[in-house]
Each structure stands twice: as C-alpha cells, then as structure tokens.
Length: 320
Image (cartoon, rainbow, N blue to C red; front, side, top):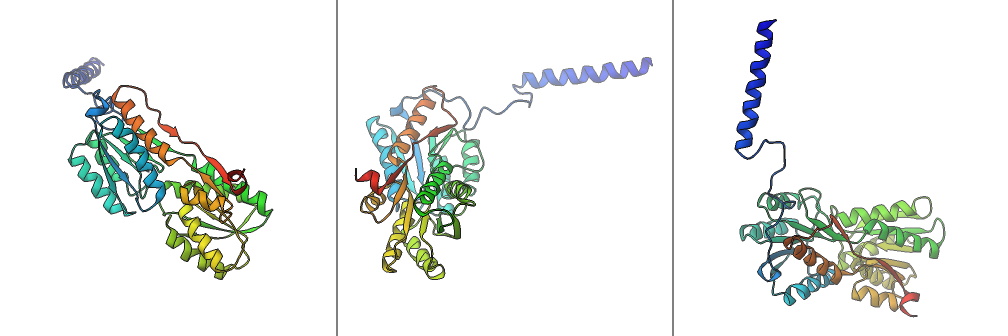
C-alpha cells in the first residue's frame, strides 16, 4: 500500500514539473497558435497596408465590378493593392497567391475559382500569418477572417419562386450551372432545386462554367434534346446571356432567369430578352471586403460573414 502511494505521488510530481516546464516555454499545447487569419493584428493605417487580391476572372463583368469596388476604396486611402486575374484556372490562382505570400502582403482578398482547390493556398496564408478575406465564394478549408457574399441559396430560391409564378406547376425547365466546385454553384443549385422540388420539372442540369460562350453552346444542346422546355435558370448572367442567343437563334420563346445583376444582364432584362435576374451588388462587395481589411487592422471586430444584398429585378420592375 505504501509503495503504491509513493508511486502515485511520484507520477503526480513528474506531471506537475512537466506542466511548469512547458509553461515556462510559453505554451502548454492546449491553445491555438497566434499565427493565422484569426490572430490579433498589429494596428496599421490604411495608407501603410499592402493588399493582395486574386479574382477568379476579369473576363466576367461581375468581377470587373468587384475590382472597381476594391480600387475605389484603396485609391482614396492610398493603400497599395496588387490584383491578379486567375483566368478561371485554379492552379494559376494558387500560384498567384503563393507569390503574394512570398511578397509578404498584409492581407489577401480572394474570390476562389474552386472552393476546394483554394484550400491549400488559404492554409499556406494561415501558416504565414496572413489574414484571408473571401469574396462571393467561400473556401472549403483553412481559416478566413470573413466571407463577403450574398446569400446564394436564398437567391436560387428567389429564381425558382419567380419561375413557378410565371410558368405554373410542373413546367419543364433547364438549369445552367456554374463552375463545379465553386461554392456559389452549390448554393444556387441548392436554393433553386430545393424550392423547385415537386413544383417545377427540372428536365436537365448542365454545366456551362459561368461563361457566356459555353452558355450559348450548352443551351443549343439542351434545346435540341428538350424542345418542350419553357424556362431556363442560369446561375449567372453571363450564361443567361448565352442562353438568350441560343433561344433567339432557335426561334423559341423561353423564360430565362439569370443571377448577378451585371450591367449586360440588367439591360437584357429591361429589353425583355431575359425575364429576370437575381441582382447582387458587386461594387459594394469589393468595397465591403476592403473595409473589412481596414477594420481588422484598426482593431475593430469583423463578423465571420458579411452579407451583400440581393434583389429580384424583372422586366416589369425595371420599366416602371
């Protein structure tokens, strides 16, 4: 019995000494590291910041508007900013971000091409102690300071509800989907399909990569295989505008709903070529992202998700 007690006290003493030793080294291994996007930032004036930006593509007017929102703010505050066009290439985007990490930018603003493929780059930024802000699309992994985005799931629901209202129950419709792996693609599909279930007959869903030319060619194929569809939901305006061309060439009358509210999309809705678009505010998105960066470096709290508003713009509403 005495030997057992001695052994117990001995083990306890050794354990206690280990705790004190680790405490003296500055960590017990029970907390999180001070590095990464969640760390407390050194305070910096906007004029002293160097912001790195990676946008999925500048071949889409929506992201040109996001860029405009970013530069509107950075120019006014003399903030150094470097903007990279990933050209819808996930590998190029990762390489661009790695370059910015090596340049030791203060913060990264990223609009991912692919929400899964971007994860390693986000984690590398975390390891380098560089905060990350995502715009319009999220990262599936790593830590981000915040995501600035509209509620894409809600937007998909808005589109489905409008199509149901205009076309009626069990109308045959098609869905043009964005880049596989992009969070916006998943969320817009979730919202549209979820609301349309048992209400609309989605006869086909095909990928057109958020691209106008692919929207055109994909819609041509859809019309050949499904000549009786009465509606098309495109997950962005670029694909919707491609669908407009295909429908016109086929001599058909099909209700087309887009998503984004970019200038060309709004013009097409106003002209009656598209019936509606779920409109975002890309310039505001860019501005909100930069403001979140400024807030972080002035010690203000940054919410984990910053909402950008949505509105359904129809031919009727735009011609009031």
